[in-house]
Image (cartoon, rainbow, N blue to C red; front, side, top):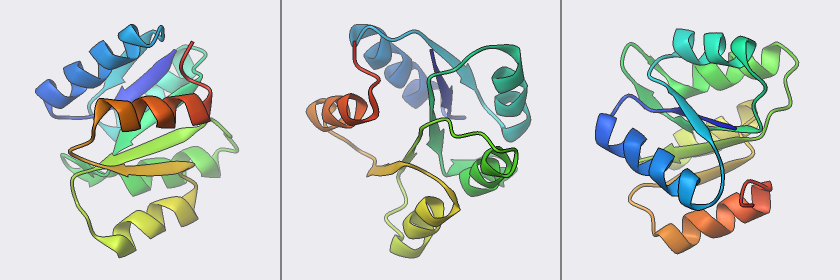
Length: 118
């Protein structure tokens, strides 16, 4: 099961639909607090995190997850092509980064590299 942390309804639903097509169940969170709650409520295989979230950003979520000792694979999706922000996400603990908009074929390859495509 993959946790999609995205506050934009359309983008969140698109990612959930793509994950289903790839044979992966998904749940979602729209905030840092919801994501941390979802992590404690179920066994997750990975996370997709948007860097721009209402009231916070994805890097604080990633830092909290890594600070707790979790090694869950994290894919960052961002519409912000800021190289410093993206490299910071990796330094904090993201396993991979992709820019939005993305091609489904590229996302599929990323899922395969993270072991998320069944």
